[in-house]
Length: 150
Image 1: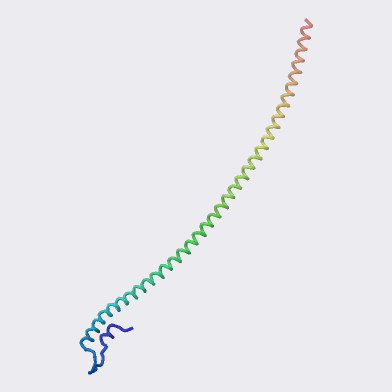
Image 2 (image 1 turned 180 degrees about the vertical axis):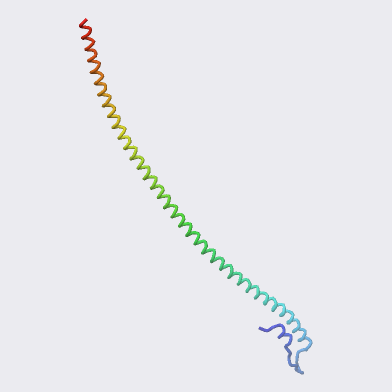
């Protein structure tokens, strides 16, 4: 690329006949040097800006990659935690059902025992009642005998 200095230092050979006006050429070259200097400086600044932006873009792309990996890890961890929690909940429910069934079985067994005790008490009551009736009947017979002797 031609630099502004190259344009400024450029010298043309002069021809005697049909040549250009040296002053006009020099004046025009001075204008070109000024415009070209501005453009050259602007292009250089733009190249620097592009390089800086490219570096920043690479930096942000690395951050994006890191964030994506972190997000994937977080999702995986959340899924693992969810699965562990579900397994624990299922185990708690299973344990509670086992305890509840044992309690039901114990209560049913206790009901059977209480029903048997009730039947035994009813039998004892019937035996006691029969003995009392027999005692009363014998006492009544004794009273009748005593009354008949009088």
